[in-house]
Length: 216
Image (tube, rainbow, N blue to C red; front, top):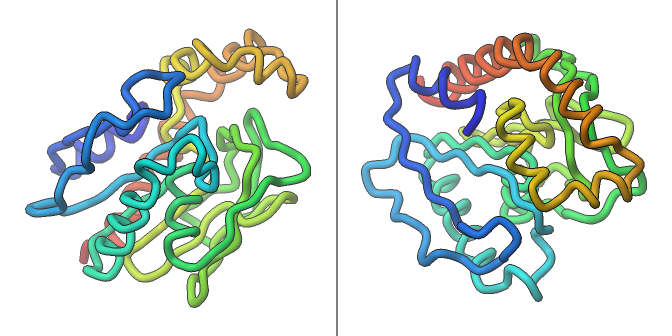
């Protein structure tokens, strides 16, 4: 959970992590998603696959969509990050599709919410989403929406949780993807080390706002 762990724990949450695909380069799921009984908050994280790649993740993505709809309909606070945001968008009536210009690295965004700062935030995505019906777009970049809210559900295309340790884990299998996109993996890691302290503060601010808005 990277930088997300500290602010959630600081706000009194006990974290129960469920990894859908435990092998980094395999889309095989570990088993059924956990029930939402006694859950006070749902956080949906990233993935190296696309939400529409049913040939790879068709065995579990529909179950995740159902979990999202159940949580949303129950007004259970839910935060989605990158793939998690795209899954929320798709489950609630938006559209997820490839973008013309991938965002990989640290980017500033245009935000309508003071607690979602302009960044820079870490991005690593080849897909984008449209905001679901009745949702409020909160932030955007040149490639499309970067954040939205619908009731107790908030989604961000960027990765507020990203620290250097997480990036190193992601790059175990995807260094070639970075190079193919014209990104130097070592330079990206060096850049991340320089951003991580300020990124932790921005993440804490975002989480505090999200909890204040959705758990009152």
